[in-house]
Image (cartoon, rainbow, N blue to C red):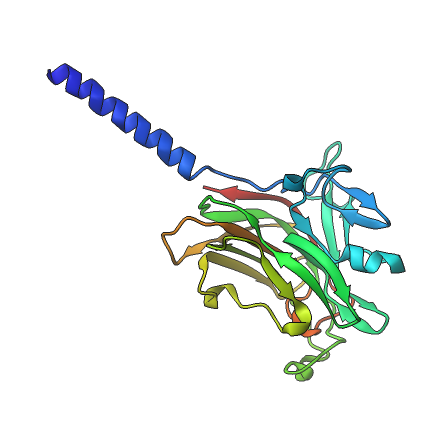
Length: 257
């Protein structure tokens, strides 16, 4: 009887462990290495041609600016953090487009369209259900002096721009619809649906690629539903404030568990 109970207990412990792994799988994100690119109607995409919906996880404003011959996010094949055949990085640049400041950005989600010359419509977030401890990778930031400002940041003109990599896990049931002309997005720390968040602010030229790790601060025990990562060449770009010369390179992202 004791032997039977011991075996039964062992089986239950094993099933519990397998269930735990199933519920909290150690997910990564498609194309976290930024190696895979394709081009459509002049716009660079971070997925292959004929990509599946699950592969189309990275959004940019490229499809709103490519008709002008401009891609604010593009592949970089020479200046990479990890060299090798087929390796690439993402080069994200802030620009002045027809007199309007456009921050360079790369995010998990989907771009919809440019709205006039004052904003864009997009969806933030991709389905994600794991609970990583941190995000690591490589970044090279080259800030310019702020040459575009808007209230309440008018006094920042001439100061050195700042870049940012931010990450947040949310309990959303669907991607968050966002229109930049309606105002800036809600900071993760103040969003009632946030489960975890972390951020790295870059306030100077890194002089080349440097490794980074962003720890995730968990504020809820709930299972995540959506993941939002944003790479910004100008962290105040939602307020049309930044430098048209700021560039941020990112490469080889990875979640740590």
